[in-house]
Amino acid sequence: TKGGVVEVYSKRALANPIRVLEGAELKPGDTLRFRHRGEHRAHILVIEQDSAGSLTVFAPFGGAHSVVVSGDDFLPDAVALDGTLGKSSLFIIHSATQFELAPLMEDLRASRQPQCQGCTVDLFHFEKVP
Image (cartoon, rainbow, N blue to C red):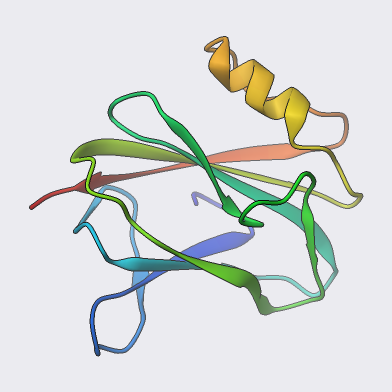
């Protein structure tokens, strides 16, 4: 993310994970991990909106609220990209305190910028190619 506190990493097959830069091309099946960069604990949520408009919570996978990360560390979840090709956006939401998923998903479904009190929202874009 531009000036953000979360970095995106990708792993393909048996290769070592690499940091993904804004606008990168990724393939279905690539595994994404997210790394919090900072000295302080943070509460983080990562939501993907794919080219079809579908929303998927990447981290915490299946969670109802943000996941806490202490200091400089990877988030516990990894996610394999599905086969929907085209441009995708990651909404990387972070805060000093825990926050709930449901209101953020409502905002995104209504095509509004996700908001929660005390949160910062960073956007990260990539493209899924064959």
